[in-house]
Image (cartoon, rainbow, N blue to C red):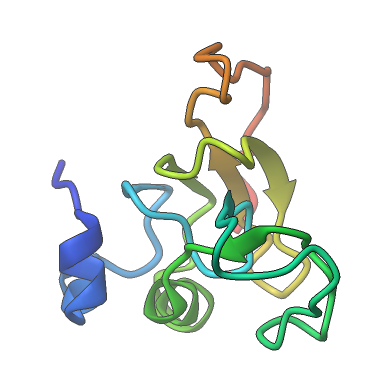
Amino acid sequence: MRGWSKQDLDYGNQDTIPSHIDILMTHVPPQFILDLAYQPKALSSTEPCSMCNNTVHGCYGHWGSASLIKEIRQRIQPRVHCFGHVHDDPGHKYDQDDTGTLFINAATDLSNRPFKFNFYVDLNKH
């Protein structure tokens, strides 16, 4: 098992992550997936986000890695991607593209409570 830090991912080291793995764990989230973090000085509450179809996020901005989501969708294709870093947006969601990856932001919420839920991975699917 090997870990990848935000710095690893920001400097293009995603090619060291094997393709078609079952579980990927990183510190940083992929861009646009459970990556909204509070940035009071970066955005106004009514300014549309230029990064994701002009959705208004209030005072929240994307902290995820653009290069990581590209690698996940084009090459790595994990069944589960577990990450943290962004405490404002814990939860889980399935990717709607062909990979079907389950993304889990397992960071504690802003009250320092752990994010917990049950999930099942069909090992025969993929």
